[in-house]
Image (cartoon, rainbow, N blue to C red; front, side, top):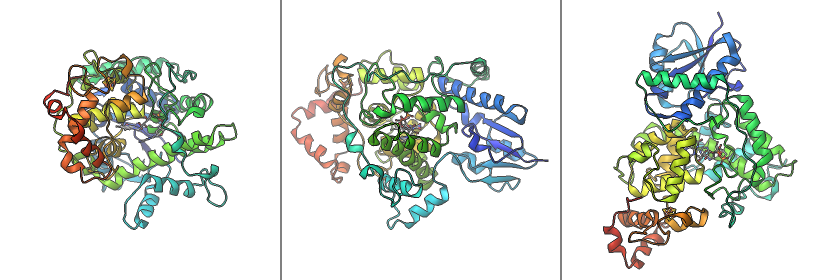
Length: 489
Ligand SMILES: Cc1cc2nc3c(=O)[nH]c(=O)nc-3n(C[C@H](O)[C@H](O)[C@H](O)COP(=O)(O)OP(=O)(O)OC[C@H]3O[C@@H](n4cnc5c(N)ncnc54)[C@H](O)[C@@H]3O)c2cc1C
Ligand code: SF4
């Protein structure tokens, strides 16, 4: 009898089964998927992807719902192969289970072994994105000439990016992204959610029409559409936000990439080819850096930093609970225009772009002292592309500085003036970005200075933060600011 291949719901692409001609089991663990309140749009899209895969594979494939992966593994009779799962919990379930052939992970560019070799050779054993990214470029021969020099004369064109949005525009005026057409499997996925609700599982957010690619075919259409309509603009406005432009020039590829519908190395090779279609090198390099650099880096750091990195780090001793409006994705009482808008978009699509995650949601939570472990849990459930491995370095490290600087050299946070410069949120807001006290005080500006004051003893030791700490001395209204409630949004 042929061995079976166990697939997790984030291993749905052909590259997870193209070496296997036996039957497959797509394993849905209730503990991993539904035990914590997932965004409805995410649940609908993910179930749609699972059942589309089942339809494609036909009789060869069984979708099996189990309580926990551990329970399934312990009771499984016979032999099967499994590709290294993407979370500690799932991997632990297979320890000492010799009837499973354990294959190395897929869905990322660099193997775990090659990452270990790379980091092992570094004298201080410290990792830095830029070094990792250059290593990746050479190791995989991406955007390098025959002599291992960077194509275009530079490794990184980031200095050409990070521009504020163009003035007096409502959108970047790019074509609408590709929207998949829903079918009967999407309706089936909705019925499944109702069934789960009857079983007592709870969901958050609204389930509007499906926006994200749920099959390999759709994901490839989205990729092509991104190359044709948004790649040339990728980069310059990466950090900008416009109220009426939810996607800007972003690719929207993280969701299909993270459930394996696209093979990242193929995406990178296809992006390289776009240079021939006159895509600027700064855009192509910028996009490739996100996938070959950032995405792979975040993945490897999850394993390198270890399980406790996400579960235990709380360097700034942040203890507050997640506010109810974030848990419920309810913007109805939020007056702060930036937060209100981002929460509304998140409620609708389970997605907002990077800078809104980092400098609006993450920054507000760090200023307010929301517990980082609550945030790891929330980002994982509320975002279409959320998975445990993505949370570690992005949420604990980059967004909350909960690791004390292992991941970034200073906390990513700002007052309202940065948000004002990089978006058009502030002009329609009841608060004023440059006001620190009183009824018009911007919660980000007031929150920023309170945050700096609270942690000044820690931050004055950090050369990149000492200027901000010194800035406190210039604030004539500091005493009043500290007395006021910057929690009001
Ligand atoms: C607090 C916080 C939480 C985040 N949570 C997630 C998450 O749950 N899942 C997730 O995939 N990304 C996450 N990110 C990274 C990034 O915000 C998203 O990958 C990106 O917004 C997805 O939209 P896109 O596909 O249009 O990306 P684009 O802007 O088009 O970028 C292209 C691709 O690069 C990859 N990428 C770029 N940066 C990162 C990164 N830091 N980590 C991982 N991949 C990256 C993604 O695969 C993305 O599709 C988070 C970032 C922060 C600051
Ligand atoms: S004024 Fe402050 S709260 Fe209002 S949109 Fe600007 S940054 Fe956000």
